[in-house]
Every structure is written in C-alpha cells, then in structure tokens.
Amino acid sequence: MARRQLSATAVALTAALALAGCSVPDTQQSDGSKADSGTPRAGGTMTVAYKSDPKTFDPAVCYDATCWNNMRMLYDRLYDYKRDTTEVVPQIAGAAPAVSADGRTYTIKLRPGLKFSDGKPLRAQDVAYSFARILDPATKSPVQGFWDGVDGAAAYAKNPTGLPSGIKVNSETELRITLSRPNSSFTYVLAMPHASVVPEGSGERLARSPLGSGPFVLKKFTPGQQITLEKNDGYWDRPKPYVDKVVEKLGIAPEVALLELQKGGIDLMGDQIPPAQYLSVTRDPALKSQLVSMAKPSTYFLTLNTRMKPFDNPKVREAISYVFDRAFLLKLVNGQGEVANEFLPPGVLGHTDEKLTHDQDIAKAKQLLTEAGYPNGFSTTLFTWNTPPWTNLLPQVQQDLAKAGVKVDPRPIQQSALFDLAATPGKAPMTFSFWVADYPDGSAFFNALTSCAAAVPGGQNWSFYCDKDADALVEKALTSGSKDATAKLYTDTSKKVLGDNAVVPLYYGSKTELIGKDVGGYFMHPIWAWDMAQYWKKDGAAATS
Image 1 (cartoon, rainbow, N blue to C red):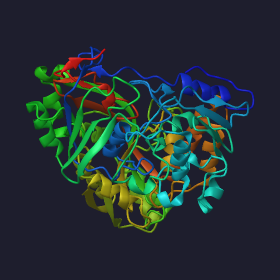
Image 2: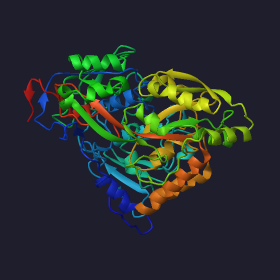
Image 3: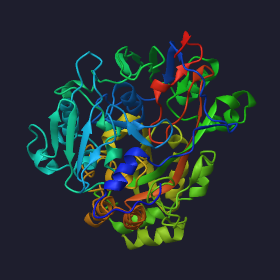
Image 4: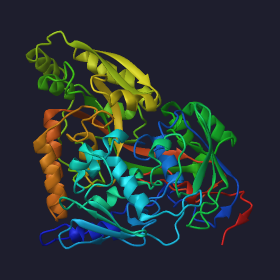
C-alpha cells in the first residue's frame, strides 16, 4: 500500500484500509496454479475434522481456531476480507465508514433488509450491543484491549449499563462510533471475528446457543463428537452458502484425519498435516492437485510469565532467549516457514529485517542464570497444545533448555484448556504458542499479546507483561498518519518488548493443506482460516447462477 500522508489525522489512511487494504498473493496450488475458480454448485455436505472442540460459540470470547471457523459461518460483521487478500470490504455495512475530519468518528450505515437466522431484523442497536459486550468486564473478552480506544470505554467498564458514550445508534440502520484518539487500524478491528453481530440481549445464551445472521445455523453440538450446521436459507448474500450442511467431527487426531481425507471420508482438516507425514504427502504426485500453500503472517514463540518466579527476573528471561537453535527447530516442521529475526512476521506492518533475536549461546545463557542466582539452573513447567507441530517440537525445545540447566516438565494439553490455563494469573510459567495476525498491522500483535490492557485474566498476554512505554509507542503508531512512521514505531516496540524478553520468537509459519478431491472454490485466507460460504462440493446437485 502506497504511503499516505495526512494533515493532523489518520483519516486518509483509515479510508485506504477500508477500501484497499494490503493485498497478499492468491492462494496457490502445489503446481503454481490458483485455487479452483470454476462454477459453484449448490448442495451437498462439507465434512471436516478437528482434534479439539471449540471453547465457545460466543464471538466476543472466541479465540481458538475451531471457534474462529464457526464464527465466520454463524455470524456476520460490518466488514470482512475479500477472498484470500487483506483487502477490507463491506459485509453487512452498506459501504466504507464515513470518517470525520479529525479521524475519530466513524458513521456506518447497514445494508437494508438484514435479518438474523430466526427471521428477526438486524438493527444498529444489535451492532451497538455486540460491541458494548466486548467492553463489559463480565464478558471476559480477550480482545477488550482492541476496543479501549472507544470514547467512554473506561467509564463503561466501571459501570456497564446502556452503551459506552462513544457508541451511538443514530437510527435502526445507522451507527456512530467515536474514538478517544485516531486509530489507523480501527476498520480492521471492525472486521475481526469478535466484532460479529449478535441480537441485543442475547449474550448469556451465545456460548452454547449461538444466533447470528451468517450463512449457516447451528443445529447440533455434541462435545467431543460433532458439530452440525445447516444452510441459512434466509442469508442475505445469495446464492451463498453453496453447501447445504457442514459436519465437523471432533476429537479426531490429525493422523487419523489425514487418512480419512485420503479415503474420502472428510473434505478438510482443521489441524495441520502431521510433520511425520508431511514429506510423503507433499511428494506424492497423486495428491499434487489437492495441495494448497500460503505463507501465513504468524509467529511461533515462547511466553515467559513475568509475574511468576523465576521469570519475574529479567536476567532469567534473557538467558532463555539464548537457548534455542531456531534453524534446527524449523527442520522439525519440514521447513514450513523461516527463522524468526524479530516478533512481527513478514507481511505485517512494522516487520523489520533487523536481527532482534539471539543466536543459540549456551555459555551466555548459563552466565546469565548464574548472575540471576540460578547457577545450577531451575525446574519449571511448559504448556502447549497436544497436536503437531507442538508435539513434534516439544522434545527439542526441552533439550535446548536442558543444555542451560533448565529442567522442563512438558504439558501438552487440549487447545481450549490451554487458553483457559494460560490466561489465568499464576498458572502457566511458560507456554509454547503461536499467533496469526488478527489483521496485517503490528498493533494486532502488541495489543493482544504484550499490552497492559491484555495482561488480565482471560486475555491473550500470557506473559502478563506490562510496560507503559511500549504501549505508548503503539498508541503513537496508530495516530501517526504515516505508514513509514507507523512501521518505525512498531519496530521500536519490538525492540522494547524483546529487550525485556517477555516473549521469545522462534520461527514464522507457513501452511500447506491437503483438501478433498470434491472440494470446489477452495482458498486459504491469511487472517481467517476458512471461508466456508464460498466453497462448494463438485458433486453438488446443480450449478448456481
């Protein structure tokens, strides 16, 4: 995106994000061609498999991969992304937001005639309620920090009645949002899953009884077994969705899911191709046309809980940053990605080519531990997911730490359980995790993973790191009005965060998927995973117009 200079505001930059975005290459098949763009067919069932259940169906709380895919099927947002790019386009909004001259006020009109799947009208009051829920402490939304720039957010958190002063309903089809300061990434925030629109007053029911205006409707959820969704016949964006039903099989190990896909028992895998099978799958000529790859704006990293011993000691955290052989870890995932040189991945505004990470230096790590009062090392617990690639990487991470005298008790657990445990203060001294950008801007990483606002129970800042100076750099970046200035400020933030070693970046990820032979229209998205409303079954009953 070209540099856009503003007067004293972020207006032009915000408009550019709303209308143009930062595009990425189209999803590529293994033979270099673009994903299937043939004529969609209506009908049929799309069957997928996941290792883990979704933690919730409440979009204000959802933050795991299984529930993200369900959010996109069950709900709509004001804005969404165009196919496999990061170009932001209107969804249930009628157009890009009208932004005031000072860059603080967004006026948004809704498409006419919108309805929830139960037939009730979708109004601006519902949108306002959906956003206010995120700022209500009782909701325990992990993304509250993305919204604390709304005027009156702090006052509303203390007394969550009605609406924050910065959210106004002008009419049933028009909403006004006023920010306390300009925010060049706010249109991206409006396209996040958490900004999904729910009916006014429905909050307490959403976790297990979701109701939205999206392309699908939840018909049945049996924890640990299956989720069944059916086409929303009243969906506004016809003829989507193309399939009649989506069946999600739960508790299926990736190894089993891979075999099922190859036999035609499922169409898509919710988890990655297991590293042990990766080479055999990607080198099989018979599967070449079913492979789809994309570099994801993602970072795999360790969190060190700055409020738990011994990681409350800066020298201990610094020692850990010298422990890892990143190039070898990347080999264990078949080279899917590249070694991390900083926290922000390529493709995200603010990424720098400067080397901000440390090469493996065990002698340096031991020296720092001695200076910190741990000459013989220490013992700790490391939590992570119980699926590849973490289960493949965990033994080597454990061995690297052991070289410096750090004895690790590895605890791979289910995805939803990890989210609960790591977000609870005093529970997880160390985690091995990853992050895919919520949107292609550095603030998407810092606001969620390292900000003071996110260092709360239920948040995503699992290191519970809080530095006011780092937060101030991000705030300055969001109001700079210049892409170059913003990028520089994000780099400065990375230097600050990595200087404090609250997180230890290991590598940036890419993703290769194997899709079923009968899946049409498939593409991956760099931010979201799937867009099920746009896929079809090649054996569907009839071609759509």
